[in-house]
Length: 466
Image (cartoon, rainbow, N blue to C red):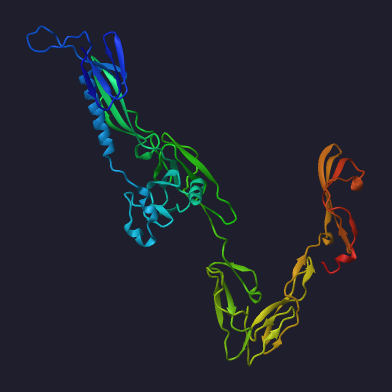
C-alpha cells in the first residue's frame, strides 16, 4: 500500500523502496509500499518518515514543507515592496510642475523631466533605461519626448551628469543542507532598484547572502556615481577666449574613479569687450573700464573756458559721452605765440630755446629763455633741444717716456716729456718700447712710452674745438 501527500508550490523527486517517481505537477510525498504505517498505539509498528528530494536535498516532508513556507514568506515580502514609477512625471505640464514632485525631489513637464542638483533618478522610456546622476549645482533637463532626443542625451550627456545602465529586478533564493536533514533558506532581491549588480537581502538563514554591491565613486565636485557608471569630466572649469575645453570620460569601478580631470563643466570666456576710440582722440581701443579725456570744442573765445569730459568704455562695448576734441585752446584778448619748432606758447608763458641743435666737444650748448607777450616771442634761438657731439681726435695729448737702464754701472731711471706744439695734436695713445728717442750715452735698455703717440699737424676739423 502506498500513501500520497502533496506540497503545493514546488516540484521534487521522491525515493520509495527500490523505485523512483518523478512528479511535475507538484511535490508528491510517497510512503514506500513495504513501510508499515502505525495505525494506533500498541500495535507494535513504527511509523517511517516520508522522505522527499527538495532543491537537490533529500529531507523529510516536514523539513521540505517548512523550507518552502519560508521561501513563500520571503517572496511575499518582496512582492509587497512599494513600486516607485519615476517616469510618471514625464507627462506633467509646466504649469503643474511645481506640484509634481517625485520621491527624489525631481520635477517633470511635457516632453521631458528633470534631475535636481545632487540627486539621481531612473528614466526608462522608448526601450532605453538609464540611471541619471546630476552632480551639478542646478537641475538638469532630460528630453524624453522622442526616442531620438532621449538617445542623443544618453550618447552625449551634459557636463556633470553621470549615466548608468538599468537592470530588471528579480527575486532570488537558495536552499542549503545544514546537515542532519535540516535546511536553511537565503532570499534576496537581485538588481535592487534596477541597479545592475545591486542586491538587497530579504532573509539569510544560511549566512550566504550575496556580497554587498561594489561601492560608488565620489566625484571631485561633489556627489557620486554608482559602480559601472560613467561621467564626463573637464580639465578646466574655465578657459580664455579662443581656447578649447578638453574632456574625458571617467568610469566608476568598485569605488575607484578612472581619469584625473576635476571639473564638472567647462566654459570658454567670451571675447573681451573693447570700445573703439574716435580717431580725433587718438584712435585704437579701450578695455572695459578704460577712460579717455575729450573736450567739448577744440577752441573757445575768452572769457569762455574749455570744458572736458571723461569718456569710459562700458560693458556693452560703447564709449560713454560724445565729445571728440582731443585738446582745447582759449582765444581772447591776449594772443599766443607760434614756436619756431611748431606749436603754440600761451601768452605770458616761457620756454627754453637753444642756439644750435648740436655742438662738437668740447664746445657747450648755449640756451636762452623766450617769453610770449601778446603774440610776440622774445629772443632769437630757434632749436627745441641741443646735444654735444664728442670728438676724440682734437685732444692736445703729449708724450712721456721713461728711460730705464744703467749708466756708468749704476742703475738709473730718467724721464723725458714732449708736448705737442702750436698747430699740432697727438695721435692715439701708445704704450710700449720706443727707441726713437733713446740717447747714445751709457747703457740704456729702452724708452717706454706711457701716453700719446707722435705729434701731427692739427686737422681743420678741430678748429674751434679748443
